[in-house]
Amino acid sequence: MYEALSACRLCPRECGANRNAGETGFCGATDKIKIARAAPHMWEEPCISGKNGSGTVFFSHCTLKCVYCQNYQLSTENKGYEITEDELCEIFLNLQKQGVHNINLVTPTHYVPQIITALKSAKEQGLIIPIVYNTSGWEKAETLKMLEGLIDIYMPDMKYFTNKRAEKYSSVRGYFQIASKAVEEMTCQTGKCEFDKNGIMQKGVIVRHLMLPGMMSETKKIMEYLYKTYGNSIYVSLMSQYTPMPQVERFPEINRRLNMTQYDMMVEYCADLGMENVYIQDGESASESFIPPFET
Ligand code: SF4
Image (cartoon, rainbow, N blue to C red):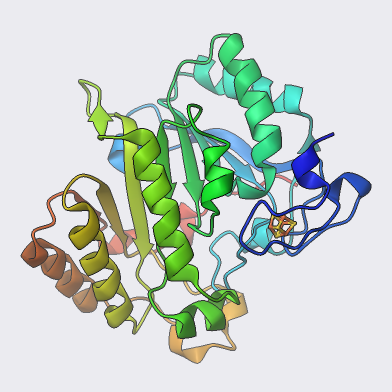
């Protein structure tokens, strides 16, 4: 059905799997869309969740599969159920009817062609709320260009600065270089950040960084890079909600919660750099209760 899925190179893994013929690559996704949850979600940044929630669609499978994944049921266990493009379009329209502030596509990379079809159809049928592309940051600029004009808000992670960490926890090389090119493409597409009168983001980029235990040097380098490159023209979300999942037992150095004193030091570090647009979390955010239940 889709040319790009015949020798899939949608993400930087570039497996070349013929997904149209039923093959799967690293992510494990076929040509059928699979999702695990579609519902209003209150636990995003305030400018995304607002009062009514963000209309999140959690896609199954993942192109990165970090060892500490907070959504490992989807990324690694591949939980979820298959839907068609028409059903995805229907989901978008139903979420809008429920009054959510936006449609939030969570881990969408491996389904970009199908999402484009569903979004175009939904927009023709009256979808007008902003579309959020919520990603691990492991993205090819070429794939992002396919989305130009359809996405209003990009919410990429920037997880690692060093290859050592990226290889160990996400089995990728060159993560930082690839994620920084992706953020560059995202900022080009969205331009200046804009908010409505209630403070809900309408367009722009929010870069998320989940602090991992014992890795302050990674956080510092990433914050320095973001400020030096973008000043205060983008938003940054410094996240403290890291929860050690059962599968990290074999990585004892991250099999613990984040030290909140170190988190507070990083918040101060951002302020000292001159960063003004940083979302921060309190200690209570580090809880499994922030991980929603998924349908299978
Ligand atoms: S999207 Fe999946 S199949 Fe395609 S290149 Fe990436 S990991 Fe491979």
